[in-house]
Picture: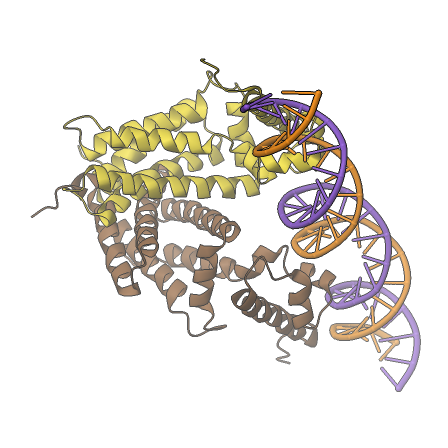
Length: 208
Length: 208
DNA sequence: ATGTAAATTTGCAATGAGTGAAGAAAAGCT
DNA sequence: AGCTTTTCTTCACTCATTGCAAATTTACAT
C-alpha cells in the first residue's frame, strides 16, 4: 500500500505551515516584538504551549527553512561538477543563496522579501541570522575541505569561504544601509566577490 | 579646582564594575542561563531593578567593553600612519583585535579568556557577538572609506574589510571547533589573512 | 549647616517568553 | 471496538524586562 504520510504527519505539516504563515503575517502587520506567541498560536488555532513543540522559540519561526537551505548547499558542494574550481563552486553557492533569499516565489510563500526586511529591522533577528550564516559558512568550509581534500586544508577552506562570504555580506549591508536598490546591491556584491577573489590588495588599485 | 569626577560618578563606576565582576564570576561558576539577574544584582549589593539602569539586558554585561573597543579601532583608522597601505592598516587593526580578545591582562580583569569561552559556548551570546563584530566591520568600512576616500569607494572598503575579517573569523572558528591551541590559531589567522589579501584564487594553489 | 532641585535607587506590579508535569484527545494498529 | 503511542492542552512556575511612584542620595546655592 502506498500510504504516503499518515494523517498525523499531514496534520503536523499543516499546523506547522499555519504557524509560519500566521506568524509572518502578524509580524508584518504589528511588528515582531509587538506580536505575542499567544497571538500566533491563536491565529493557528492551537494552544500557546503547543507552539513550542513546533518551534523552540519565537525567533525560530522566522528561520523555518534554515536547515533546508543549509542542506541544499552542502549537497551542492558534495556533488561539485568535475573539474570545477573552488572559486567557481563558491560562486555558484553564492548565487543560490541570493536567489533563495530574494526570489523565492515557489515553495511556501512570497513572504520572503518581507521576511528579509523584517530580519534586517529587528536586532534580535539580525543577530540570529548572522549566527545562522556563520554556522553555514563553517559547514561550508568543512564540506569544501572534504570535496577538495587534496588541494586545500581546513584553514584554507575556511579562509576562502570566510573571505568570499564576508566580502559579499558586508558589501550588501553597506548598500542596504545607504538605501540602494536591489540592482545596485547585486552589482556591489559582484564587485565585492571579485575583490575577495583577486585579493584585498587589489581593492585600492583596480586592475586596468 | 581639579575636582575630577564627583562622588556620584565614582560610585556609579564602582557599581558598574561590581556588576560586571559579579556577573562574569557567576556565569563562570554556574553558567550563563543558570545565573539570574537577581543573583547578579544581589552579589553587587544592588536591587534587581537597578541592574537594568546599568545594562539594558543580561547579555550586555558580557559585552561591557564593546563600545570602547570599537572607538579604539575607529580612532586607529582615523589616524592612519602617513603612506600606510589599506592592507597594512587593516592588519594592524586585526592585531589589535586579537590582542584585546586574548591577552587583556591590564584594564579590568583577567576574566577575558574565560569570557571568550563563555561567549563561544552560549548561543545567544555568540549571536550577540556576531552582531557586534558585524556592526564593527560596517563602521570600520565607513571609517576606511573616509580615511582613503580618494582611493576606494564604500563598496570596495566594505568588501576589503569583510573579506579580511571574514577570513580571519572563520579560520579562527574552524580551529576552535577542532580544539587547536592558541598558537595554532594565531598561525591560522595569519594564513587566512594572507589568503584574503592575495585573493581566494590563490587558496588552492599556493604561489610556490 | 540647611533647603531644594536633580539624579539614583528601590519596591511593586505587569507583561510575555519559555518549561515541566499530568491528563485529555486524536491517530494508528489489531 | 479496545489498546497503544503521539500530540495537545491546561495549569503552574521561573525569569527577563519594563513602567511607575515613592524613598534616598548627591549636588549646589544660600
